Image (cartoon, rainbow, N blue to C red; front, top):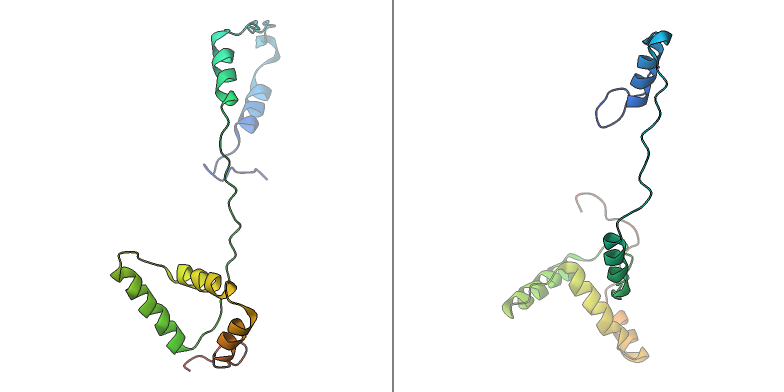
Length: 134
């Protein structure tokens, strides 16, 4: 069974070369010395490359992103839309994820009693996904 490459759908070149070698007559083969490879490299290129890595580059580490989903009441979802409109009002469009992240930062700045009061003000939700059509 022949293997096929995903890009072209044809046999790999190594298989074709192997097949071509077996079909040539043995008398036609000649002993040819391979061309000598140059061992000396020009000095200009390594000197230019050596100077480039000497400059320190700032390396930014990207934070790993996590994808998640959750359920919220329709009124809270509408509140996200209202906050997005307010942000457009002062010419700073905001995404839903930005608003949620900003809300988390605001909650993190609260003391324990204020955080407890904010959590107690929320309406309790049933755990799990809502039923379809509800």
